[in-house]
Image (tube, rainbow, N blue to C red; front, side, top):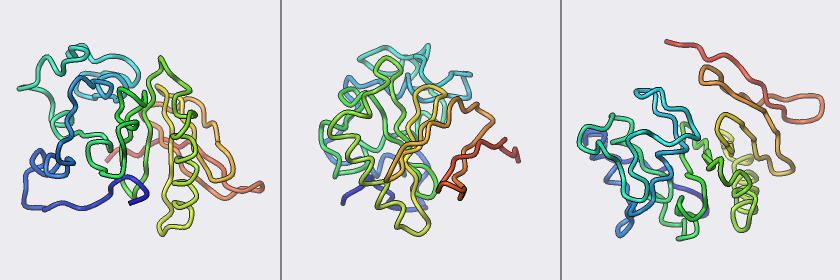
Length: 189
C-alpha cells in the first residue's frame, strides 16, 4: 500500500472496538502522547497545539478509564497503516497523521517542530500522495496543520491558507491560476 489506510471495518462492532480492530498487530502508542498535544478535544475545549491537561507526557492519559469518546476511538494513521514505517510514529515524526472523510489526510504537526513535515522522507511522500490523490475519484487532499495554521499540499506547490478557526473549513476550488483554497464558515446541523 502506497498511502495510509482507508479500509473499512465491520459495522457490527461498537466504535471503540471498530477503531481497535484496525490497529496493526504489534503497534502500540507506548511513550507516544503527541496526539494529546496536536489534536483538539471539544469536550475539554482543548485547542490543537497545546497539551491536554489530562496527558501524562510519555506515559498516556491520566483519565484513561473515563476519557471522552473521541479519545477512545482515536488512533493515528501510524497505528492503522501497515505501510508506514517506524519513522512515521508521531513521537519521532513530530506530527500525527489523521485520515478524514473522503480519504482527506491531515498531518497535525507539533508547534514545537513546525517544519518537521518538510523533512525527508515526509515532504516527498506528501507530494507523491498529493499527486496520487489528484488522480483519484473523488480527489484526495493532503493538509498540514500547525495549531490553527493550515497548508494544503498540491503536487506542484503548497497553498498557505493561514489561520483556520474551529468554525471554518477549507475548500479547494478552480481559480484563474489553478486550484485555490477558500475558507468557509461551517454549517452546524
